[in-house]
Length: 152
Image (cartoon, rainbow, N blue to C red; front, side, top):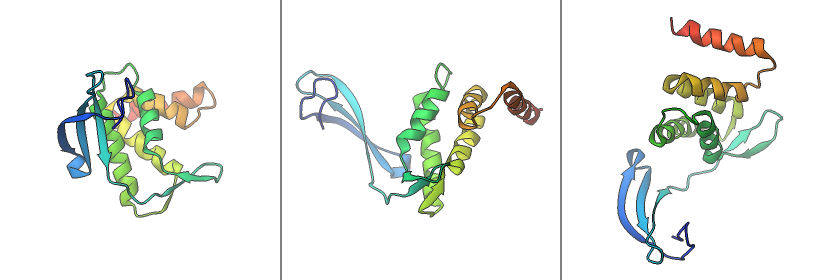
């Protein structure tokens, strides 16, 4: 594995641990050139499936897109990267277990919002505001009222 810091072509594995109920392996590595440490994850290469976008286009499912969206929504919130990874893993697991080879992006977005709502309401509202593309303040207020109504 190439070092992300100095780009040395080799690294030494210091520790390997199974994660996600054995679905991936987390490896701590050290570069023999610059002595910096970094973490890599090894996952099973699974059968790809397609996401049907709102405009009808189809593109391969990319876990990283979900992770990036959730990271943006959780920015400056007291949420650990471990919790974010678990949320994304949970969404990916649900999507893959549906046994559908094509899944609408709306279904993925709804799954993310369900999980974010349980994790952090501010992150949920941030994600929902981008995902649902609120047209005006009234639409945003309606979403907040639904959120507040569910907590009473």
